[in-house]
Amino acid sequence: MNPALRIPAEFVAPSTEDAHLPPFFEVGSFALGKHSLLILLSVVLIAAFFMYVVRRRALVPTKGQYLGEMGYGLVRNHLGRDIIGEKDFRPFVPLLFTFFFFILVNNLFGSIPVLQLPTFSHPGTAYVFAAIAYVVWVGVGIKRHGLGHFMAKMTMPPNVPKVLYLILIPLEFLSNMIIRPVTHALRVFATMFAGHMAIMVAAAFMAYLATEVGGALGIGGSIFGLVLGLFIYFLEVLIQILQAYIFTLLFAVYVQGALQEGH
Image: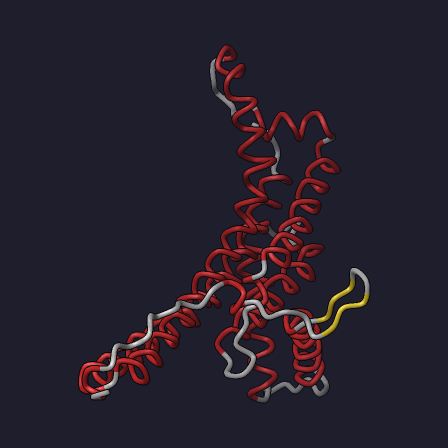
């Protein structure tokens, strides 16, 4: 058959099964896969980095020490003190620090060749972190105000005609106590999953144009796909950093709202 008349095979876009590989092995209900290994790797990398940069704290910091102090200062000062408040922020710094750097490193795994999997593209990881955040800010709110006063804060906006509370209380309860933790997790999961899939589709389509379509059209299209893929890649890196910041920022906002006095 004339190669010029060859009909290219149908393009098959990557699926969720391609994004999330099967586990390496399973023992009963326990399974170990790439996702689990990357989570363990992130813990090792974060611990090793900060242990390394603080091993010799110098008055004139090295580049590594400066980078570590800058990251810690961002979390402590901008996400802790400035949002939660000077009086209450200190007990929450370790958790803010853990949230930010764990999510940041696990998100950035999606942009590292070979690794290429943001672990928060799995809903389970995102919802576990959102559940931890939920338990903490609800717990500190109840501890500060008592269960009744805290629930009133969450469901009864001030300066509203009392008759409207018949409508507002169930709506506010649904919004603050149920929808809030769901969207807290969904925001980071959805962006990581969508970005990961977008990069996979761009790469698969570029390969399809180059190998199946061929010719000037295929080569030109694959070059365009490469440019588009690089744009998506760098955009995804930015989103990965922003989502770590936003998740931690929202947790600080929720804690501040739970601690503040009612109107």
